[in-house]
Amino acid sequence: QVQLVESGGGLVQAGGSLRLSCAASGSNFIVNNMGWYRQAPGKQRELVAVITSGGSTTYRDSVKGRFTISRDNAKNTVSLQMHSLKSEDTATYYCNAVITIETIPRLAWGQGTLVTVSS
Image 1 (tube, one colour):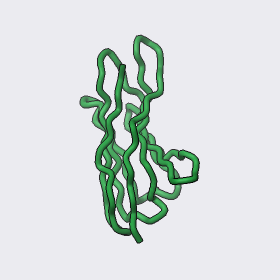
Image 2 (cartoon, rainbow, N blue to C red; image 1 turned 180 degrees about the vertical axis):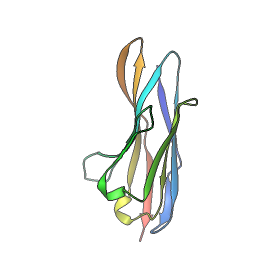
Image 3 (cartoon, rainbow, N blue to C red; image 1 turned 90 degrees about the vertical axis):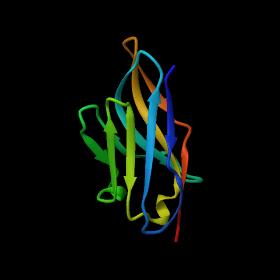
């Protein structure tokens, strides 16, 4: 069993910064792509950023230039540094990872961490 545990959400004023972190724990697994999704009230969950095990990154257009995703493969962690936060960034942010256990790829999700940006 692999678990993803997030931390770092909270309340911040518009224009401020926050850093989210997520750690994968368990045994006998390999972490492939890792990413962050978010879901605002009444809206569908959407991809924010993803990073491959090789370090290639993809961002949704609305966060390009403001958010940076990074990972530490040795620690199986992924982080999301968020700058210039806007009220529309308010959402619950979920860590996501493709985990391989005994050659079978599985999708893992964290429990979510709330980010609230006040205007």
